[in-house]
Length: 337
Image (tube, rainbow, N blue to C red; front, side, top):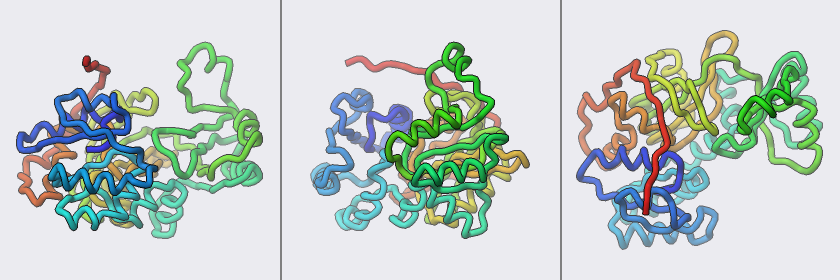
């Protein structure tokens, strides 16, 4: 498992530890990654941008007799997808979708364009590469009467995401709220974007309804299991409270997205309800999500199911049985070394 220092890594390690047959090796570029100290074999890896990254992983898999790779790091997904056959040629399965699917899912603007062409509902949106595009899109989305959202087309972990609202009280935000806030005024956003070049942005209508994360287990476009959970409370973009809901509208919507793009393995989707009450996609994480461990409390071990499917191991019906209505609350804990 790569990304041993990711916030969700300890939970995913816990999921994989549920099967005693698994010999788990974890890796990360940070030699002090949390996963190193959780009773695992640890190997320090180069960063995904290193030219020798794939060659290093291929050699590691050969020398350590690795049967399966579970990637957690967004920046490495396309690399693994492009070299999937190289790993398989030496007996290592890689839990990642094909390169075309990864390229679409990792680019939020490309995702919206693709799904719109396929007739799958997405919020009204525009793509901006310069300030003039941003201004045009803002007013087309109803500014100043309506709020809108902008985010980089390519980014992860809520980086660069902001909700633009003219009703925002920045004094209230400064003195009565914690620093991590997604809201910003239009004038402040325009000031920042006018100061220097910025990456391509996706601008979309603000969706006022409930937000959900959906952990999916996919088999080359076919959704084996889709498990929606409400995002009742979040800290720094990470779900810390919620409940598992059997919402067929959300499940069917996610099935259509997985099928259209041809996604495979552990896939995360985030959706939010619009004014019409229907679910609309916010973004896709074409990998295992950090809060996937919460589903363990609802009776399903999605990372382990993905590994078992890749390795051709049998899966019992009860392993796919979700205890709907289960609530969860996450908390911090420590490792000492």
